[in-house]
Length: 295
Image 1: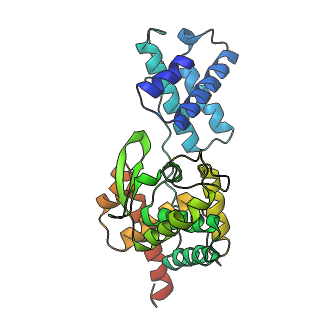
Image 2 (image 1 turned 180 degrees about the vertical axis):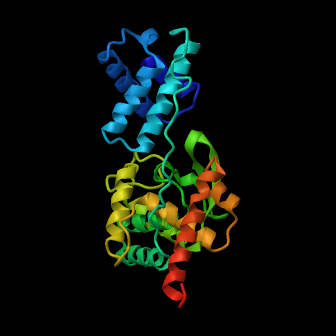
Image 3 (image 1 turned 90 degrees about the vertical axis):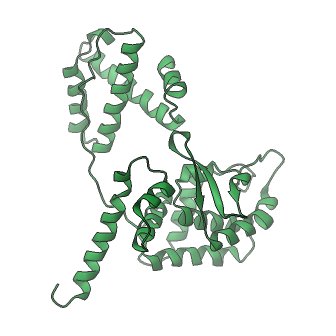
């Protein structure tokens, strides 16, 4: 598996998370195939791979999981064929189940304002971590960036003179995302008062730090978002990705162009961004049914 992992990193430029997932999926598949009597890679057939996916589906695996695992297997066997490990690729016609498009939960505009107000009130005590939490929440909602993109930010990535942040997204693609004055004010308080109070000699350039001076990780950010949203009545229990969904939905509701939102979010496909138009339409329909006397 080491050679395959190296291929994913060097030739396919996959993230560490994707490499870990793909390698795990392939190991699981090959183990299952061996248990079914396959002697090695050359003995595995398309019917065996389909049976493996079928067993996962029967065990309750979600469509998104089946889709990823079939993608991992196709990638692995294509690599094995090119590298001479097998003569024919049994996964060439292995189809992925279509993912179910579910509408994500989002905050209302009032809900977003409420949770940001909660973060701002907490930051009034000048606790450096509360200043950080406010800056994290403001930046997540202002930009719609992913939690992994946020935790990967360095201080120099935030250009406050132009109010843009440089983000390294999926596939290591770089993009510039603007943010507004409230996020800039929260960042200013964190950088001038909060970060110096927790930074250590080995903190490095990380924009957001924990109490021990180390770069924050996605788990910490999720805890921050969940804990602050718990103070907002009737708000759905969202994580950082929920703020991303909310930012995109509110942009489109405010009249933003779909392709502009695609660029901000770092989506490679416009179809991925279009789900937010469905969210907006769903909310519009609900409001209409509640308000119109002949709905």
